[in-house]
Length: 301
Image (cartoon, rainbow, N blue to C red; front, top):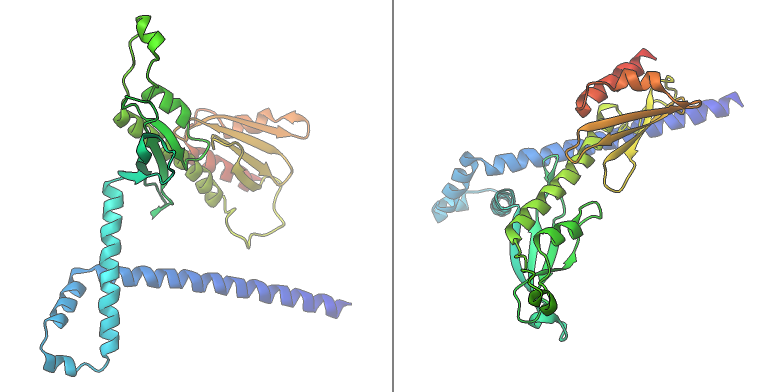
């Protein structure tokens, strides 16, 4: 029986080592890819590639591995195109474009105005968000939201009602009510700000998990009572973060639109844990301060 247990333990340790080696290999591949991209983007490498292109045919015949040179040239062109794309996406976070709706019954002859919103998180571009606008009102240039790919946390309907109001009916105009104009520019700027705020709040939760070491799959299972075992988003707007301790206490962090902490509540087996709440939350509003207090609280346990 003891031999079987020992073999199982050895097999588990071997599996853990293999997983760590796989993760390290993947990390090294990622670093190698970044280094290659950096080298290909450098001015010296670009000069060398251009010089090789302008070399005479006699010099080219001396090249031992022409396929490698062609591959390098191709990779350089792809990297140059990728850099151009990244520069454009950074400098133009919102792009407008025209779309044609193929539906024969579509309003305004199928003409649709598309808006593309670029979002970046932790140095990487995320999948863009799209908002489609059309003109369903006869004889009017007023726009209306037709389709979108935004998350439910972004208050699109409220922003559209505020900045893209619908035109007044004939009865309202006869009654003396003046029609409110639409402000597409302000609508776009406000909408992008709300999208960025939403992703900033998601980033706050992810940074807190990373700060507390919860992203590490190989974390020990035997933890002190004051150690935090789980951190996650608790609502659809990503304004609340749920915290769970090893002793089954739970807490709730409430943030404002910009990710600053407004309130912290801790519950234990006997209800509200006022002592822990007072220890962790006071005059602090930055998540970095709260994370530091959580680390100190866990180390004290």
